[in-house]
Image (cartoon, rainbow, N blue to C red; front, side, top):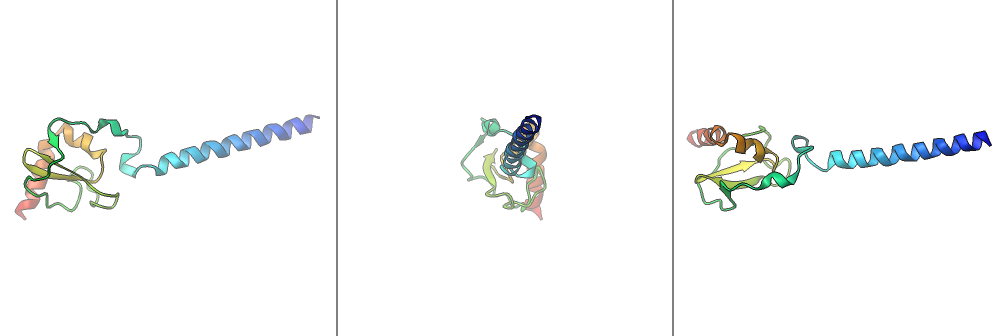
Length: 113
């Protein structure tokens, strides 16, 4: 009787570990590495618009993370003060919003090259 209970407990624990590891693995692969743990609710900003008729952004990398644009899917494109901005992902938008002028300088420096 004791062995039966021990085997049953062992089986339940093993199933729990498998279920938990499956959920953790799915959560890790759901977002790119620079975006892990970030929610999508932080995407609202009144200083930007979906219109991209500003000065083109010639950078081929994200000014925030340095990642090559397009490696993590379609870049986030928006206009900030008549300057088109391309970021590698939505999570970089939070850092951009903290100091937009810093990143605008990087974008405009690429225009001069």
